[in-house]
Amino acid sequence: MSVQPTAAWPALSYESWSDTRQTLHRWTQIVGKTRMALEPMLNHWWQVVLYVSARGLTTSAMPCNGGRLVEIELDLLAHELAIRVSDGGRGSLPLVARSVADFYADFQRALAALQVEVHIWPVPVEIPDDMLPFAEDRVHASYDPEAAQRFWRALVQVDRVFKVFRGRFEGKASPVHFFWGGFDLAASRFSGRPAPPHPGGIPHVADRVMREGYSHEVASAGFWPGNQQSPETAFYAYIYPTPPGYAEAKVKPAAAYFDQQLGEFMLPYEAVRTAPDPEATLLDFLQTTYEAGANLARWDRAALERADAGG
Image 1 (cartoon, rainbow, N blue to C red):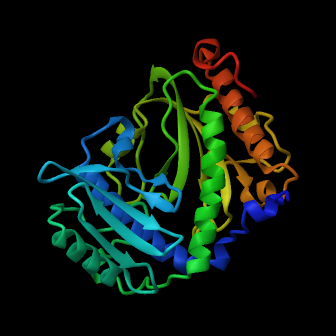
Image 2 (image 1 turned 60 degrees about the horizontal axis):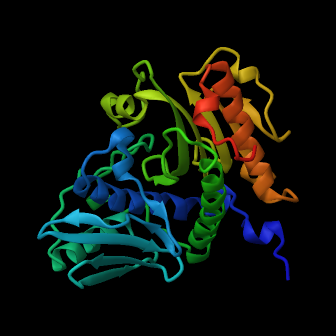
């Protein structure tokens, strides 16, 4: 029996899960900052990201003290945070409605019980008007299991399509990964040429971080579940630096548009979810926005793209 597109791609309006989203965002930051503290530096800060797993979001295996590896997974099927260590140790926390402060305290205790040593800066980043330390945050305390699982199921579909698009490129490209700062799933392609220094200006993020992230010309696309300031769940695509004429480029599908304030092309998630072929619709958006930017910026597309790729 065939699966209808809207069944595989769940509804995900910001209003339907905003409180859970705010809490889960901060939980992923606690886990993500742990990865940032344990992993060696990589270009563009790729060592800090999380990945979509078969059950939720994972750090993948990370080095820790004692010559061991540790993996932390937000399991959004069983609704637990699982900590697994290569010496056989295991810890877990239930994902239930509770404050960020309680989650953070229990998370620290679970790591200590497994003798995993880690120190993080315990304050959220990239969240406007929020510098409330995790240990003091009793404001965000919502968790709707069904809503969190819907978000993950959307990530599963997006991750799958983004990987198809990534496979069309032979040049330097990022993995498909989840940035816990912005709370978005993203994938990037690079021309191989250096870029002018990024101007920075991201809330609670040092300008040097942005300059490392955008050190080379890049075309990025991602999936973002909205926030209080911009509540529409949407896909985005941009190129840095932005070449003249990019905003006027013709892209697909018809529902896509250029947001002048963000400097990015946007495509509502709902337009993809309800399309007769969501995968083809999303691939059209990824391909045409990339082509528009790469052509205007004069990337060497013949050298960077697979000759046998679709698009």
